[in-house]
Image (tube, rainbow, N blue to C red; front, side, top):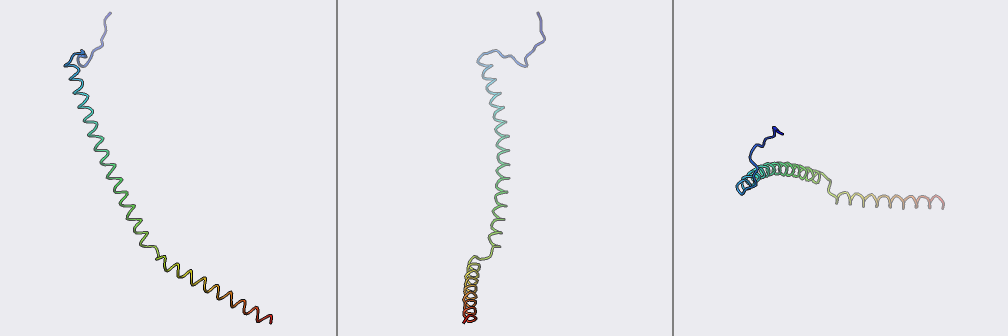
Length: 98
């Protein structure tokens, strides 16, 4: 029986073969880690830019809001005007009956 199967390099389980395989695996993992570090750095930069943009938009929205004190004062004035109008309406009704 013959075959045509071949290996790229010897796979003898000797100390030097194990060391060479370990070095190759470390080199591969180191290259993968460098690539992942680069991808992570790009993602972080993108996220930080998006966060800064969002923060700026929120600050612009906050600055463009009217001061709440003016709204509260206007609401208080409206309540007072409605109460005065109701009192005058009651006075007119009372005078009309009387």
